Image (cartoon, rainbow, N blue to C red; front, side, top):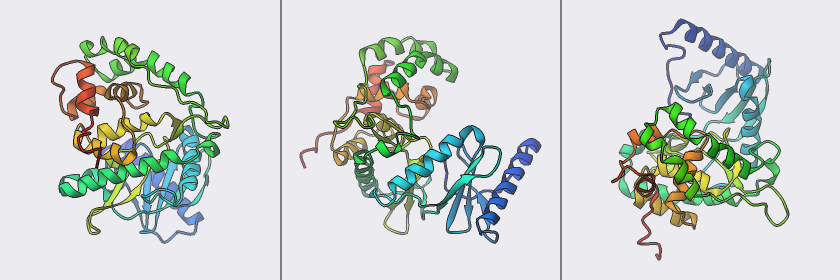
Length: 324
């Protein structure tokens, strides 16, 4: 997860960690020299699953280890596919490729603005409402795009098989996260009672489903406090997939509206569709990065310790003003 702020490079108090970061920084500097950016200042962003550097004021350099090389290819392709087609800016791809031992890099434009998750406490209520509307509009635009040109680099290929595999490991994955037994025991029956629909091919038999960001959250949105709190960017497309559109609303409910039915209602009104809260909670259990112990710590508690109550608490949307 990318957080838009500078940090002291390599100062983590761990010798092995420092050595790894120094080597990584040397790779980044060598790549910048190769790309004609030798004089640019490097600043490593402090969070995220992959190393990301600001290169001066104009560029961002993202590094992908060999194990994540396919994600590097996918993100470059997705960003090129999206360029100029969403209501919120996405990074422009300046260069991408390999830099030895199966590793890849992605050189992108640096979007202006700050991490919305950090800025959120300062955002006025009216602007939060407008942001929720823009989130819905952006997701609608993303899901309206033809994903077929990306089917060769984005998974899972067979959405039904993916859901079945996630269902088979849902309990074990949450147990590994530390979810208590009373919750674990409820998962199989809940998933049996809620069957998320499989993504179906379109009329031409092209790629099933829609183009999914999969981690559409405040942490991946940028905002400019000096420009009336306008959204200025949507980033981090390396986990993009092709599948059912409801899957994208897991992160929206958990990380954008965060259990606020008024905000989620505004997102869905702008998007133009409603979803059964139980379906969204089922997708939350099936999501690749699902972490229910964390959600239970961070999000509003349900009135009763049941998954049905949890679905209503986190994913119910206020629809009282949908007729406007």
